[in-house]
Length: 269
Image 1 (tube, helix red, strand yellow):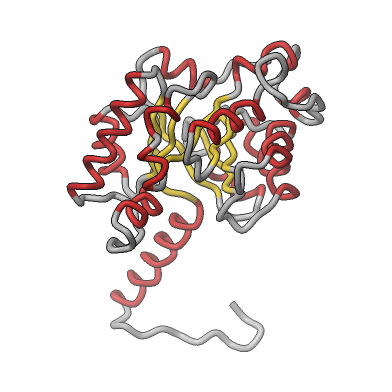
Image 2: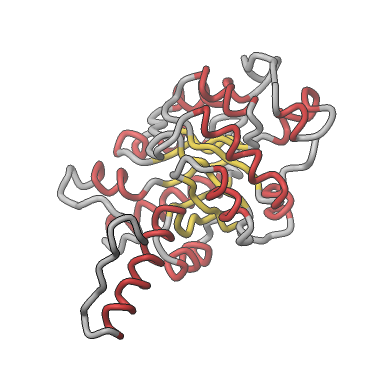
């Protein structure tokens, strides 16, 4: 089995930049994979896609060398195992709120005797290289999401879970939950209580030898997070990049033409 390049990167003391895929398009995944990300996460939770989209997107990413990850919709063994069988080299699981949740999550990713994963790596056996059965347990990454007040309350127990590789922070849900709805959802938080929570999560990860990931909205904030001690930061995704580039093009056109725009003829472009 091909070594997980994220593990190799971290072993060298280098941080990782992750990209996010929410559009059900192998072509979009291929384009994103060609941009130099260390890893790319297909978002099956909130992305506009499902398993039938995941597999061809992972295929489209293979030639790039980016590590293919998937965020599953929920803590459910069937979809976790299918995402791995499709070729994901790591799983991000949302709403892990207790040590019991974390232990169940880890068990779904590992073959016996370390877990209960069922054997049948239909695509992974080809995409990940030979000897998959013997190497998968050591190569697959398990990231539990901390994004609720309950998860924060159980942070020490969660991060002490055997077999867990890392924590991935969802700042939007975490901000809503910790503030009781007072804070609006969003990334790149500056509120003192959220910054303190991030430091608490980092400290728990370091105590337990886990990697820490954070979802960010800008390169500047992502670089700050790496400086704090995060090992992986997500710096945007396909929907954001498409919207921002398209918006900038339209804004530039309107600025240069005095705020006017032509109208396409029927059937034209």
